[in-house]
Amino acid sequence: MRKISYSEAIAEAQLQEMQRDEKVILMGLVQKDPYGSAFGQTKGISSVIGEDRIFDMPISEQGYVGAALGAAITGMRPVVELQFQDFITIAMDQIVQQAANMRYMFGGQIKIPLVLRAPTGAYLAAAAQHSHMLESWFAHIPGLKVVLPSDAADAKGLLASAIREDNFVLYFEHKKLYDKKMDVPKEPYTIPIGKAAIKRVGKDITIVAWSFMVSKAIEASQILEKQGISCEVIDLRTVSPLDEEAILKSVAKTNRLLVVQEGYWNSSVATSVSALVAEKGFDYLDAPITLITAKEVPIPFAPVLENYVLPQTNNIVETAQKILNKI
Image (cartoon, rainbow, N blue to C red; front, side, top):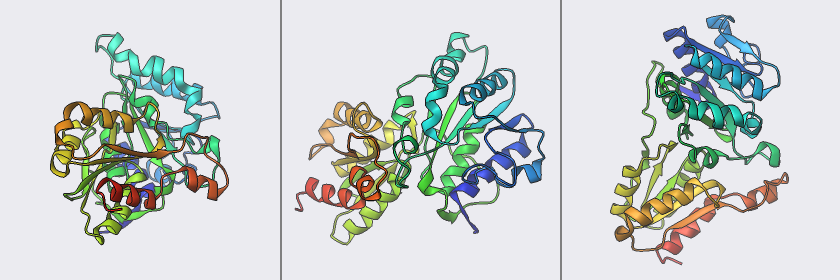
């Protein structure tokens, strides 16, 4: 099977969905060739599909997210891209007040088939204003579905599902994953939103992660395997809705839970996963639930400080060892 990058998989999913459904349109900054977005996520699409359904927008996130919402309500399927997730704050009224609420408030008489894509995350020394992980904000809001693929194969299948969804989907792409290649089928396919994946089977401890933290968790599990510790790595893929069944089933097997999140501890997806297991799976546990998150400071620019603030593979290894009383 051919190998393509995470970024190429995103572009391919959008192209195939545009070929499948003429109502799919793209909106954002520098979407058309030769640029194809800041990280190449739309590269090659306008050269194949033409430019009539691809809209290069001005730098006004509030304006073009609102325009995309209007297009969705009136029958189109927009995929709107923010150049960085950090700029989502400018469009919060359109997202939280309007798009999240409208289908419910109109009694289901309208649909919101809108996807908002945005590069997310740190580990690139891009400083505080270009390094946020904000998925926990939006997981808190009913009416939003929040997707964070951890590899190229999932990126393609989850994006196809998001574009076909009749509800608003926030689709966050980690910048550290864009160049990472793997086997990805060429034909179109979908992956269900709201279903976690077991990325590594194990029996001693469950590690729950999503987005770029899945890569860190797998690296740590490979190191721990050499020490005789078997880790089950659960990739949430979607943080809203949360796949409670997959989490509880794994913890029932391993009796231990470690949650790894790039974002901050306070009021987060990680604390929600912890609360879920404490409430519905407490009797499974043989050790306290443990969370690894970023330290509660703005993300530094200096790489050495950024690495200190953010979760690292060695943090996961050492924490798992402590949970299992190996150190």
